[in-house]
Length: 488
Image (tube, rainbow, N blue to C red; front, side, top):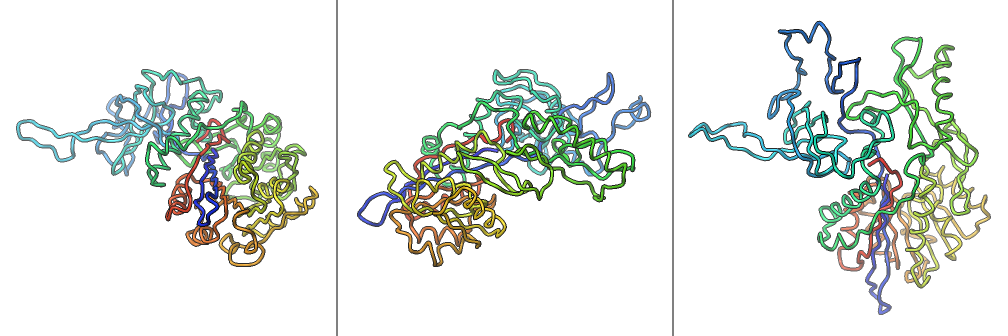
């Protein structure tokens, strides 16, 4: 997960000059990518995408090689191996290799065969590396492959700390040194700002600052949600963990190096507890389930409905353990500091704050000491109740919370009376970004500054393009925050 913060400056219509706007962005990790060899037994290995492991019956002389029924044989045969140089990484952390292939309809005259470029995606590689690949799927315009061998490693390659990194889908970057990870994450933001946001490449390079991160690059994650499938027999559940790279099947994860030490200390007991409940007939989920391990001020809890407390910059936030809350306690304070700094401005000339998509009140309550009045709006009425309780818990009296959609915040009531030249707006929408209706109302409201937090760099770039139309706002800076090292 990566947070990216960027700042806009609004060109005010009044004679007072500039109004400023900051926009941060949050990118979340997920669990998918192709994969590497997985040992079956001594002296025998098979790529995870091979549906049928080699056996004495199917691998002997004269046996027909296995090919998946729906496999498309162009441009490569199933499990065909090739060497290639890694050109770049996608925003999912997968390597991009560009090769030349013969066109499907070959020119036979004068033995001439036309070629064209083709992309092959492969995991666990770094740009500049020379690698051997094994193709397992051909798509309409690209192929997917497993990594067989790194022939010429990058100087930035390191040994992954996790023993199952090559097969577990939880991390994508453990094979890269941390500085290189953060450099590539910044580069992805630059590319999205150019391609989707419509910002000139040279200008985008100047606007996007270096990725901010802490020294806690392992054992930082305060929430872990391992899964298990329904048991095929009623005796035991052998696999409790995360999805394998590139598949929906699970890999067993007895220890996770990005989870906090406190979570790992109890993970074994939690896993044993699942099988104890199975033996007693207490498991009600016939399709499997997802476990919860939330590390908070009280310790590690497992019940989604249990209330926990997390302290950020001296402010206590109480919420249900299963609800959303930022999961890197080492970075969240830096993120809050940046958002508040940009909302206040250098001259501290803003007195009113509007926090849209406020959740349980993280930014609104954190900003209370720097603003006269703060109003948070959130469509989830339960989150609004939590935010109001958190205000009371911390003795904060200048924050008000409203249960409504973000689009309704500017339609009347409390916020309409805020002085525009002394008002800042913080927005933190879901991955799909803000609606056009909301952005139009925001532009019409014309606050002095806006700080935009997002978990979708693509949708945020799209929204920035809308905010820049008309020349009322100017993008001033963008800062990536690496909330989840080792992951995309």
